[in-house]
Length: 211
Image (cartoon, rainbow, N blue to C red; front, side):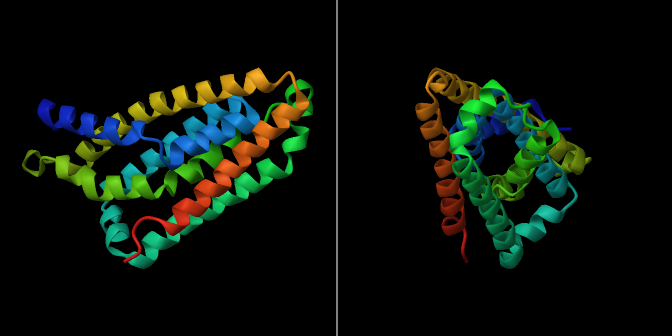
């Protein structure tokens, strides 16, 4: 299986990549500002599952196909970008109802929130590139069980992301709680979360690999 040195090196690289805010972090922050702590943490869980699904895809050999196919890569990237814009628009559209939702409305559906996080995680361009191009470099092919090694390495990334994104989500939801006493300020925060996701979606669509 994977040696301790390879595990340590991969964990260090994953940590460096994950702690730098990217699509997943900004998505979680937007969810926290728009809907609060519970939705943020459920979004983190869904996002982590989506990212690990990419690991499974790479382990099965599909990741190489995605990396080499410009059309498929751009399709995944644009799908993720469009979904972020859609979620951001909905958050902006319903920003005025946030105060009533925090006081009396039922909790946001867990499965729906998990699914939204999953879609963003599974279509994250940064994650696709990392798992398709970087993850295989840490595999010891002479040791055999290559898919198992990839799944193990990907699990390390998933655990780091789960902790890091949760911290971001809790911090953002704490800031939202501070605004909750004033409906107008909360509406502004919800709108800001929606605009952040829209801006993120546009950024994802126009940046990154285009060749």
